[in-house]
Image 1 (spheres, rainbow, N blue to C red):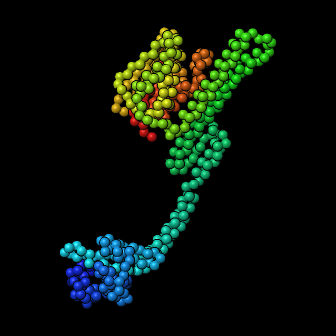
Image 2: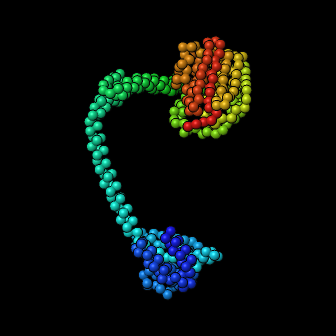
Length: 423
């Protein structure tokens, strides 16, 4: 493009299109054609061929898309892959008025560039192949040196996969290998704890789901075994059956909710939520339940708080805490919900004047199906899953929950959740 531009300047300055200095410009055109092993054509503004380095189109007209564009001030450079040719069209502009006096059309072969590119590509391929095979050989040598401890570990992992959690891994060699061995043993111990927890959970689920069904069967059998059952007794038994069905349904719904909470945080529907309004709606919904036991619900807000969270799930979490405060409270007591925030977190405290939780049980109350007083839990409709669901929801929001309680003096749950949700 720079040579074509220089030639265009020479054509204008030496008035070639006006019939002057023709031999000099012809020599320049011939020189440019030889330099690029191509063809150079000069046309005027009427598309008349002034010069053709191939001497085929002289004194003829040539009109092409490239020529028309260059006559309109649009310079073009195009590559035709099928012919391996580069075509350049550039307008010849008058220095005085900016008028386009003609155009230069150059066609040059790109064979040399293509051959050079192919050569470089082939060399690169050979070098890459040599490097690849050298890397494979080096890898095989290093593998023979370093893989023996890992083969031993593989055997240990297979044993663990078969259920032998009581065995430990003992690897010797590099310090890093021994550290892996120690870390693996820690993981095995955690797996054993998880396995024990899983078995206990399955046992609890089976028991909790079987209990209402057993009660329903006993009640139904009692009705079937009696003839001419009084309507009052029949209604009483049917009410008990409905209650047991409702209890079974509650357990199943809580289990399904808990399974959802075990999924990734991608299940959260994050939006900016007014936490003050959320807590007010929870207390408004639960006030009729609290009123039946003459329990006062109090809301204290120290500031207006808006946070990024899943409103539905967070409502469930805080509702569980307030409902527990109502269920395990003393008649005439209170449940107080307070809200505060700083520049990074918001804090919700749910305190009650209830029966409290003994210190030895406080680390276990967030476990699934864990209940301190099972008889009282059944009386209040508890499934032992509410606090597990609450904890999972709060953890999904990257928050934390703490408990402070004293027997016969009440309980305080403190929840801390970031104002801005970050994955």
